Length: 326
Image (cartoon, rainbow, N blue to C red; front, side, top):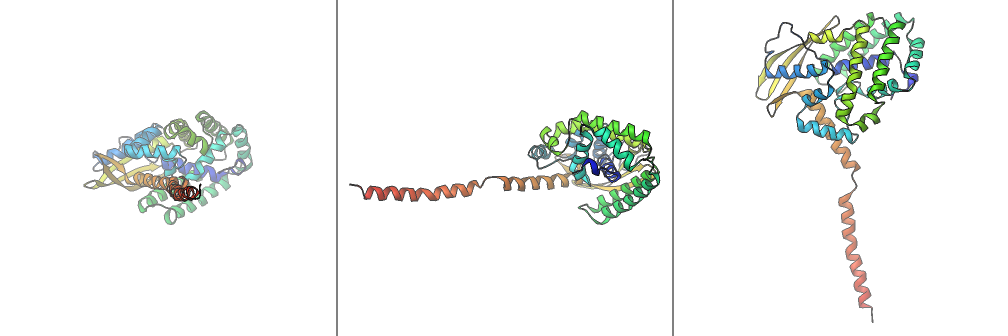
């Protein structure tokens, strides 16, 4: 969990990576890849459309089958899930980021932190961005619980962010003031100030209230020279292969000056196509939630066994009393 005193350029970087990974798809009409009109490719573009509009609820419904979506909503309400937010690398920082942005004096405090850590530090910030980019690329390439397809995507994404951040005017006080005001206002408007508030709201209401913060993040990147909407608008999806209920698609987009290209596995369930990564993430969460419920449940079977074991003893006592009576 972040504290306001520890809120630094590193946390801005991690939050930026997280938001971009959530919205790493877009839409437009560039030259289509082969197989762009197929159902698996269309399923990816549908997810992109929801994210492009800031519709996190629509995204969550399209990302997994209805029964899985319902189970994830229950797990969220029980405190066992924050999916789809937990589909992000470095997702543990997002509730803390909300806590910082939604604090009563967040805008003034973050302005103070900016002056202390960012203002006049252009050279240091460029060096930090480069270092974090190298670290991030190495991390997603060799560590973390990512598939090989995920690693290739995330590595390119982190390098693209590093290149952008190395050129962005991160130490500009006027831009910082506008950015901090926009983000804190969006966080306050959401009414969500951390993990507990997210859980209490419920999955779909929380996602709906977070949409404004996602759009504020897009505006933040645009202020600093990364027009995320324009980058997302160039996304292309093509079909590499399809066999039965399995498919492999190619996804391409440009992030600033970095061309990003990755493959994604798709799976058809009840006639609809889903990204395998989303299905796997959801299943891991549901498995963990089921295990947590078992640990939290009272030992009903053991209690029942204990009760059953006491009944004969009570009967024996009654029989003995009757036998010794007059």
